[in-house]
Length: 131
Image (cartoon, rainbow, N blue to C red; front, side, top):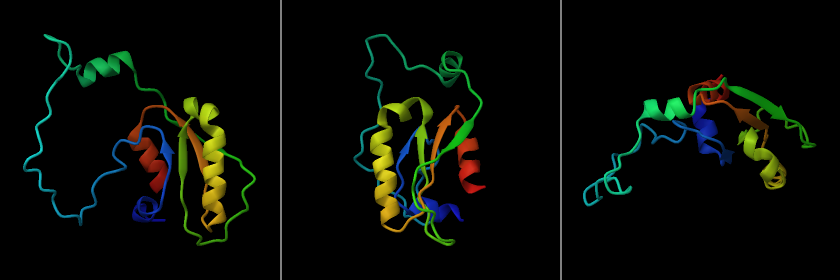
């Protein structure tokens, strides 16, 4: 299934999805006149951290994804798909809401596989979805 079909469908994703919500290539450039530039508003004399500092504090972990089996009826081949991905650390605390969402979307005729994920590789997640 093409990436555009995934992105065009309604999708709940409770994890870091860097790079998956980009502006489509066909969209016209946004008019940014009048938008104030970003500025650091931290404490006086402080500075924002660097990516290297972030990685030192939060080292990259191996990417893992696991399907969650729910009692959702199996969809027919060719059914539009909405993939729901939840961070495995958060899923336990929000599972009832996510499960309700999966059942609701499924009842409207979509194939709704639910996955939990851990790790810090946005590119691996994207490859898994596309692949």
